[in-house]
Amino acid sequence: MLFRSLVGWNKPNGNISDTYSTGNVYGNDQIGGHTGRNDGTIQDSYSMGSVHGNNYLGGLVGYNYGIIQDSYGTGSVHGNNFLGGFGGQNEGSIYRSTGAGDATGKGNYAGGFVGFNLGDVYDSQGSGDVYLLTDWAGGAGGFAGYNGASGNIVNSSSTGSAIGTGGFTLWVGGFIGHNNGHIANSSSEGVANGYDDVGGFVGLNTNLAIIERSTSSGPVFGTHTNAGGFAGRNAVSAVISDSYSIGDVYGRDKVGGFVGFNTNQIDNCYSTGWLTGNTNVGGFAGSV
Image (cartoon, rainbow, N blue to C red):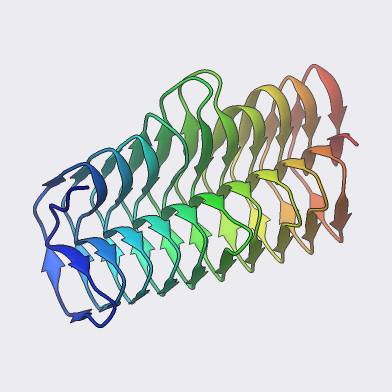
């Protein structure tokens, strides 16, 4: 494990504030433009350099177990797995922060703000574009690649696009690629483009996941199956409520104005976008 950032490891009692970094950073795992790993507190800080490495890479922080607030990262991020414009992986708490750099990965889970989230994120935004380059990679989102069962994202937004360029990219969403947790009061505006499970807001929503009071407005391009204006696939006890999509959807099979393929609960939701598809095309749902 290599740390090559301004701060390699901010330990549990560490408190960093009003600091910045501008240089490019190169390393292996847990690399951030400002801090490699954070177990303490970071506030009012920023980074501007690009980040290059393997896994757990972020424009500001590679791996967060602590608290970060009122901070931002603008540099691009390049690596394999768990990449984010702000943070690679979050298991702590992040408040009022921004990731503005593009994230480009050759593996799984990349997001405009955070690649892999198991903690809390409030009042934050991602604006960079996200690219997954490898065939059969999964989890690209304008805000987050993955939100786990313990993950909680609230009052947040994304404007960047999520693009799978490898040809067979799974779980691509304008806001979140793969959601197993809770998301509320959030929005996405960017393009979602992938192979299976592609949605304007979420690619795959599953396993007791909840999305509520959220919106998507970007267009959706699904080259194989399960493409929806809001969700590509909603399954396995997952719930979406009080949400809507206005983006157009272009797909092949199981193409829906709101959801491509639904096997669980959707309440008080609607869509207004245009649809183009070959089989199982529906104004609200492609297949149920």
